[in-house]
Length: 465
Image 1 (cartoon, one colour):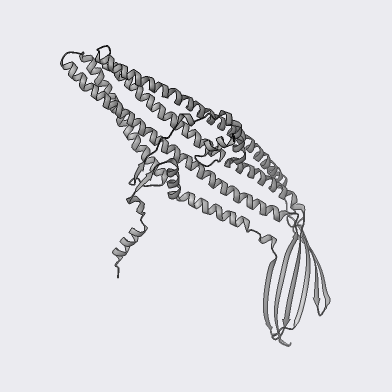
Image 2 (image 1 turned 90 degrees about the vertical axis):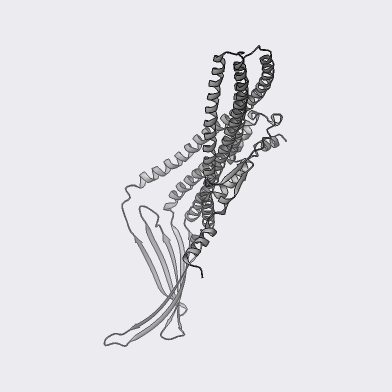
């Protein structure tokens, strides 16, 4: 038998997540999103809740179905100066709503709209989370590329510094030039340490965002297959992307459903004055001993103004049948009057709620349109920047090659050459940042238009076919 200590250790090993002992490999932003969704428990819970909500809304048909009632009674009575009595009874009844001005259907439809809103809210939250993960992923890679560029710059500067030390030893350069170069190297060393810390911070933030513990080792890579020749401007697709956003944007869908819900709620309020009509039947058998041999049947017709705020009148007309004849006719009416001082204010508030929904939808469309066109402009600006930076890098490479020759001839100082290396490194960092901004605009546009992640370019290209 296991003792308590062994049982605890075994339970710990079974329940503790084994993934912390392995390496998580991420080769693309989609990998990062899939891992995040896999470990993000809150989105799993939201998904299950929204699916259950849809199922509940779909099967909330109880008000449409008849209600059944069963009753069994056994009564023994002893009376003084009278004969004892004994009776047994069993009854079975059905009540069915026939008409209530569509209030039941409206209530059912409102429940379905609310359930769909919750599901689309989950989808929108998941989409926003995906974009957040992608932005964090590319921000980390951007800083990592910046770190690599700074290391290359520092290594080149240190190699040049060794040569300068030898040149100073032989009196070929001034001490002030050597000291200025050394100061610049110290500055680059400090920048490199800051970037290293920034990389570690961003990596830790990415792990947290993915739902991973800091101890997990992550192998992050990305194949930059960016081909400038395959890129294109999005300005000519502005109208097409706006139509997609207007049709498929999840936030707009929620607002449209809120408007639809407000309309149905107003319609429901207007139907409060319409009565509910229902039929009720009851079959009963009674007697002193089993089997029970005294059947009876009742039929009741009900009209209820129970939702009328001013006169909630209920009226019923019933018939009893026994021994093949009508032996009972009943008429009943009742009402309970209560003051409704807030009724008209509530109706006005209901109307204002619908007006508010219309206005919110209008404002969201304007905001979404502005955001969409800003992202398109940002994308096209980044594409222009990438083209210019690529040309600048080519020019800097030529300039650096010429600069080396000029240093060899003694026509240029190494400190000036270092400035060329610094400018070249800055341009490389700018290129990575511009690409990251371009990727960011892609995914933000996919979020707004509800296009699958990574499919923006294909969707735009297919538009022209």
